[in-house]
Image (cartoon, rainbow, N blue to C red; front, side, top):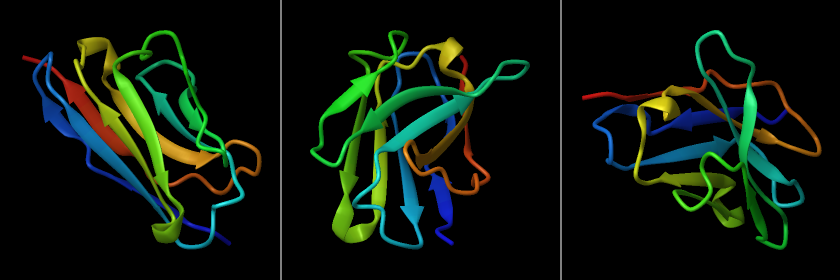
Length: 113
């Protein structure tokens, strides 16, 4: 069973940047990998996904500000987040989009002045 461990969150001011990492305990090179987020009182939403071809898609709220990438050799997926806004505050999770694993604990991102 592949385990997913997210890291890199924290408190950042509006306009700042963070880079999240997601380390998988097993191979994920054949998976479509995604970054999700869940804000308080809201449902978990997919914000970015990366295909095995490295093609990417983004939700409208993060398009142009977030960049997802993957390193298959390291079984790791990244999310570079720039120009952060208070509405980006959430717990961020990664998971396979086409073969979902057990959810990790996520990493908290708080955007506040």
